[in-house]
Amino acid sequence: MPGTFTKIKTAFNLLRRIDFNQLAKLSQKVDLQKVVEGFSKLDGKQLSMLIKMMEGGDRKKKELPEINGDFYELHLRLGDEDKALQLHVREFMEKEIKPIVNNYWLHDEFPFEVIPKFAELGLCGVTYKGYGCPGKSFLMEGIIAMEMGRIDASIATFFGVQSGLAMGSIYMCGSEEQKQEWLPAMHELKKVGAFGLTEPEVGSGAAGGLTTTAKRTDKGWILNGQKKWIGNATFADLIIIWARDVDDGEVKGFIVRKDTPGMTVEKIKGKMALRIVQNALITLMDCIVQEKDRLPGANSFKDTAKILQMTRAGVAWMAVGCARGAYENALDYTRTRKQFGKPIASFQLIQNHLVEMLSNLTAMQSMVYRLSELQDEGLLKDEHASLAKVFCSLRTRDIVSRAREVMGGNGILLDYNVARFVADAEAIYSYEGTKEINSLIVGRAITGFSAFV
Image 1: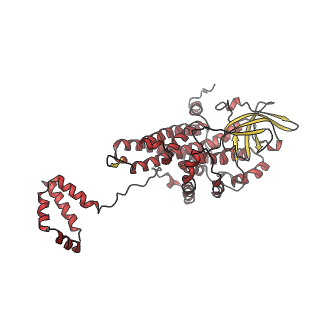
Image 2: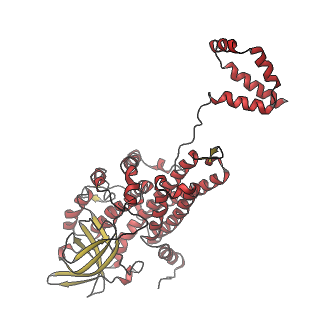
Image 3: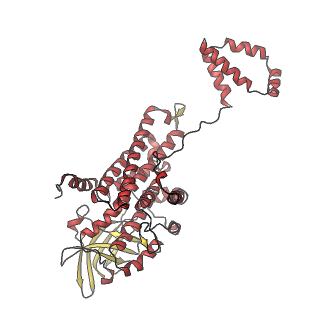
């Protein structure tokens, strides 16, 4: 009976919310005395149903927590200027990229119309000093990569190739003349670059197995060989080509300009991931490059590795962005998708998946944040970047898989975004060093033994 009394009291409290004019109108339609007597005869179940009916028109829509993949609020560690930049990049990606990305991904095309808008961000060469570049921290470079990857990993890859690999090769290994010629134009995206290291038969073994050759002659350097998976190459104004000098056996770097005789570029088709990225197969047949276009600071693979180390941290951040985008899209979906009469986010098993995703995402964010701090402090080592690449790309696969799972069949549709993250995570998992190769780099550092062949 105490429970029934409480429910009667609740019902009367609801009636008391009716103002005098409404009560007068109601008394003309019903006998209020009989209504009161009727309440006393209702059992608990009937009262519960009545209260739900009466509350229905008066109850406000439940306010849900903000969807925020930065659960530990790491952004609060940034200064005001950097916070504003992060939000500026997020706004750009939400406004300019998100509405068009699925269509371009589906058709395996690049949205060239966004390049001028991209240039207005002024972020290419974000960590470099001089040449019009912003001179920001490696931490901000990572956060920018995450914000781009949160919407689309292909656009983040385009940025990473342009700003990191291509510009980085010139910034770290180029002559002053080369820097003056290329870096300002690349910063403004008036010139687009690509980075040619991987070959059809040489990926992980690039350090000692490059088959592309360079021979110095009176006419210049003659390059022969092939490069594969070269992002941006189909429309690049310059491609950094890494080749082995036949005379001393060392790897050297070259700036190969667009339409150089002897170089052909063929788009790779049929990809299941990063479909917006225009990867190419490059064939070099007696391609002549002048000495002025050789990178004077690139004289061994150790110089190449410095560039890869610098950019590998960005790939780990990109993996975080991909995972965050999948998590936030999945969380939003589960709060609006209803089954059995209520949002599926209210079910225990769905919440367990979401918490597992958020746990991994938060661990990844904490790791890459510290990784970039080490880089800014000049303490970054190969094994630091490799560990982050291994962990983040592996956990991203798990997060995107769970995101697809909680979305059921809709998880494989582009319209719901997560399907694209699932596919793109596979490419991030492999490029800039596979899990196995990066694991061996870390293993060598912690054991003192090299397990490389």
